[in-house]
Picture (cartoon, rainbow, N blue to C red):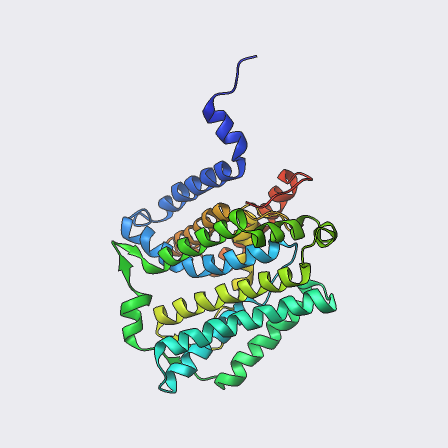
Amino acid sequence: MQESSPVMGFVKKHKEIVVLLVVLAVVLLVMSQLSRFFLSFRNLLEATRLGSEIGIIAIGMAMVILLGGIDLSVGAVFAVSAVTMGMVVDSGSPVVLAMAAALVTGAVLGSFNGLVVSTIKIPPIITTLGTMSLFRGLAMGISRGKSFPIPEALYDSIGGKSVLGVPLQFLIFLAAALAVVFLLRRTTLGRSLIATGNNPVAAMFSGVNTRLVTIFAYGLSGFFCSLAGILFACRVTSAKADFGIGYEMDAITIVVLGGASLKGGKANIIGVALGMLILILTRRGLTMGLVQPELQTVIFGLLLIAAVGFNALSTPVGRGGK
């Protein structure tokens, strides 16, 4: 029997990535028919700027889904972190201190989710559904509904900045993605995350502290939410408690579209990057094509259902993170 060609071997090994690349190509083709400006270099670069923030949240969501969990509070954590930054800046404190406070806030709120899930054993979907309301209320309470201005200098240095023509947000997204790939592939903690996601009982008997691993995963999700909140606040030069509404569904769509298994044990960070591009380019193309927001909501709902269905059909019994 004739041996498979190197190309066919690559396709079989990276089937999910190949499928996502094909979907991305189809999105580019279809959206270019809706607007003649869609494929302009400037528009595509701006799309990566707009999509990187939700992409960063999706990277954190991927760590939670890797454990077989879910985090519905990411949009609320995003808002609390942005408001925290705005309040600290508004008090006259240094910007660096404000950003540090936001990052710590996100990590603490995320870790709280992980603590409840791992200690009290409340299902993740119930836990984070509750903390979604709790954290959103916290954002409203500490801000009292006020919008905090972010200095224009932060837009120039972060929010609207590009490096060699590439939006800074996209470079930060890529750096976060590479850091998580390194974590999963090259560290003991990463292997513990994958083992816990595959079989938490077996991981526990192998010496893995599954409670700490769970707290870490949710804490990392919260940290990435706060990082995204900082970038978003710098881009729009304000911080409000209503930021991030609906972001949890976007993040879940990206992660599942990227090939992660909702049963745990698998997280494809390259797939997350491609999923982010598919989501944001579809949304931008539909908007430029003057498609009504209500219809866009229907389309993205169908996209999530299709992603979950494809994932369920293509995920084998044995899973591994990558």
